Length: 251
Image (cartoon, rainbow, N blue to C red; front, side):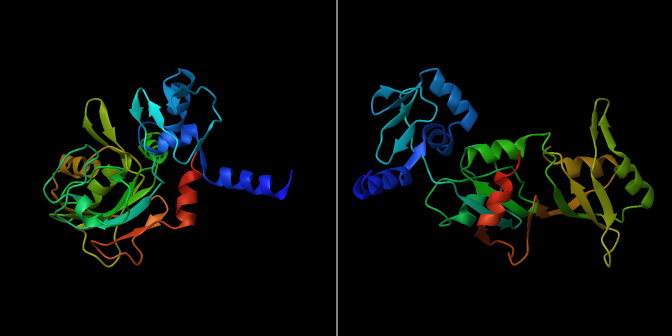
């Protein structure tokens, strides 16, 4: 092969993307689901049905799934230290004081929070358009590490702390278990640290309310391998390459 054709091949591969990845990046589905849709003949490239799994989409190609144009965005990952008063919802809609306002200008791509967070809660919130990562993080068997600092309306008594360590039965068939709980050194016993891996929404509130406490504040200080170091409240940053790769290494 001469140098001219070799350079052309390199240029082509640098601007191409596997069809299943192209579809997954659009947010329609996961890469595995894209493979299924391709095999079913539901995907067309430039007007022709493509069932080849390793097909490479070139820049400018017209890709359509079930007749709809697929626009694939480059994966983006943004971490916000959410302040109080803003709502984070995984449901599409327009909300007053939405967290999307806080990351305006972070990227030209459409990104969404990977999980919901109510207006009173604060702390780490991850945004991405990486559909596969969203699916990974929402998997209940994932056991994703999250640490919260919780402020209660009154001191937590030792006996109740022990009950929480053993797991709190919310009703007959519903038990919430925490991975760890402890008082925060140097703080009053109204403030506790809670490590939790469940994806259940408002699990912390359910646990303490069951024992007669009112949760006044919840601040997520650790999310997986991410923390709030050098990220002031209300500010955001892009994940670095190492942080992104650690997520991609998750099975």
